[in-house]
Length: 256
Image (cartoon, rainbow, N blue to C red; front, top):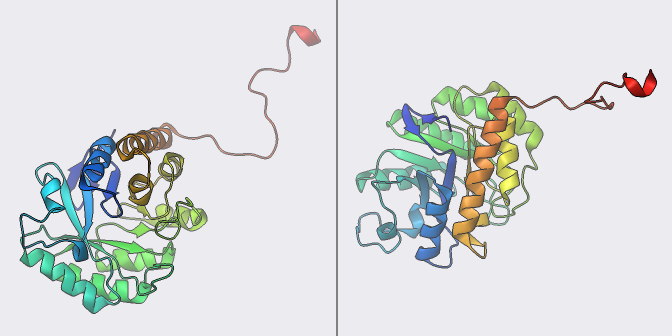
């Protein structure tokens, strides 16, 4: 597969993996390995980044994976900025998945607070990957303040509903000048393939892997979905049309 490049850094995989909800650290590792991912996001509220013996971090090979701390649980820009600074002070690379979700029921991102936090963190030298609503106008504002990607949601976190925001994601992809990573709501490998076929640069998956009967096998299935979708996008999909069009000539010996 062709490389994914974010902020000048190259990755061979276009599948990012979250680490929440797994029944065990062993199941999480199996999903990571099956997926072939090189970017793993971890909620800062779940780990002690100052403690190298933290049970979750101990299971992530930092030579193999880019640890992408996320600010999950932050309710406003101030909390998200504080979490990002804590991660960097503890020695993490200055990459941050920015999440500001004040709504505890739907976990939808706050566009205003997310933009405020992004602007501050970019100025402080962070490589910011913001989780956002599938809002093309907001995506443009994020890029204007210097975020490294935009990460529009396909559906609310953990719902496994797929690309319910497909039309808006298509506009974001069309207008993007940074990689577009479809995040949240992807519940099946076919959802990931669909996003990649549309031209998304990558996807991020967590719940679908964590709740699978076999997280390792599901990780491998998503890997195939992402690769198939990317290859189809690069190969060039045919346009959809309303009228039938024969794939074989209708003239020939039957009508002669």
